[in-house]
Image (cartoon, rainbow, N blue to C red; front, top):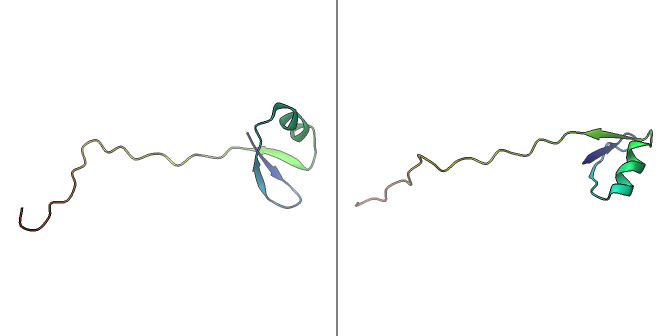
Length: 53
C-alpha cells in the first residue's frame, strides 16, 4: 500500500500491517493508488535487420 504524507507530499510504500494501520488512522497520511507501468508485450515485434542481411 502507498501512503502520502500530507505535510511533506512524500509518498511511501508501506508493507508492515502494523504500520499500515497506523497510517490509516493518522490524519497526516492518505492512501494513494500508484499505477505500475505496463510492461510492453514483445509478441509480434521483430528486431530490426542489420545492413547486409
